[in-house]
Amino acid sequence: MLTRDLLSSVRRIEIRTRRMVNEIFSGQYGSVFRGLGMEFAEVREYVPGDDVRSIDWNVTARVGHPYVKKFIAEREMTVILMVDASGSMRFGTGRQWKAELAAEVAAVLGFSAIRNNDKVGLCLFSDRVEKFIRPQKGRTHTLRLVREVLEFQSKRRPTNFEEALRYLNRVVRRKAVVFLLSDFAPSSDRREAKSALEKLLAITNKRHDLIALQVRDPREEKWPNLGLLHLEDAETGASLYVDTSSKADRARFENVSRATQKSLEALFARHGIDHILLRTDQSFVFPLIQFFKTRVKRFR
Image (tube, rainbow, N blue to C red; front, side, top):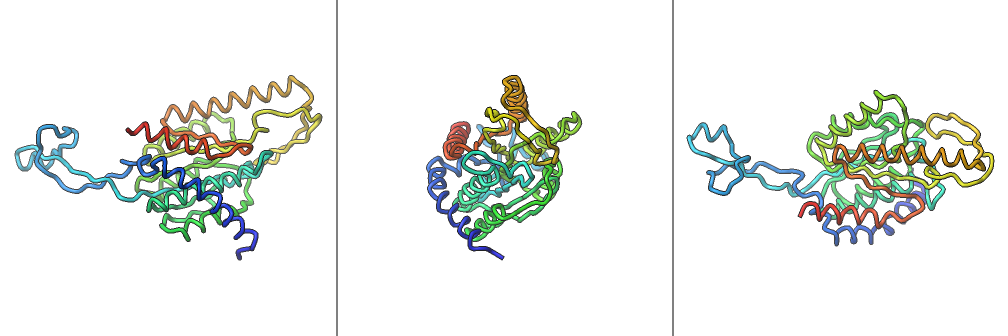
C-alpha cells in the first residue's frame, strides 16, 4: 500500500528532476546513444563509395555481382536502470543517503528516456536480483519505477554484481543502454572474484551500452578527527573500533581509499565503460550533464 509520505517523495523527485530532464535534452539526449540499435532494412546493389564492410556476401555470390546490406537506426531504445539495493547504499553523511541519490538519478534518467519515447526497465539487486520490471513506456510506468527504488528495503546486505549482470544478460536479449547505479564497494578481496566481475563487466558492455554511475560519500574517502569510533560494515556486519585522532590511521585509510578508487576507474577504462562519479555532498546535475555533453562530442 502506498503511503502519503512515499507518494510525496515520488512527486517531489519528479518536480526536482523536471528541470534536469530539460537540461539533458538541451544537451541532445537522443544523439548520445545513437547507433546503438541498427535494424536490417534491405539489400541493394553496390555503388562506388559504399562501405565494403556492408557487402552481403551470400547475396553477392548468388547473383554474381556485389550487393550491400542497408540498415536503419531503430527509432526507440531500451533503457535499463540497474540499482544497487545492498546494505552499503543505506549510508550517507552528506545531503542524503547514497540510496536516495541513486533514486533521484534513476528518476532523471527514466524521465529523460520516456521523453525520448524509449522503454525503461528496472533491476534492483543485492547479492541476488531482488526485483526486475520489464521495460515499458510512459510516465506512469516511470513513476512506478521511481517508487520501487524509493520504497524497496532489501533484507539482504551483501552485493553480488556477477549474479546481477548474468541475470541481465540472460533476460535482456536486445542491445540496451544500461545504467548501473552503485557505490561499487569492494565486497571481496579474492582475486578470482575480481577477475569474474571484470569479465562480466566486459561481456555486458559488449552486449549493451554499459554506463557506471558511482555514488560515493565523503566519509568513504577521508575520516574526520572524532576520537574513538565504533564502525560496522554495512554488508558483512563486522565491526571494529578506530581511533580517528591518529594521523597515521587516517592517512592509511585515505591511501587505501584512493588506491581502491584508482583500481576501479582503471577497470572501467580498460573495457571502455563510461564512469560517472556522483557524491552525496554535491549536486549530481553538473557531472551528469557533463557526461552527456562529452559523449555528444565523442560521436560527432
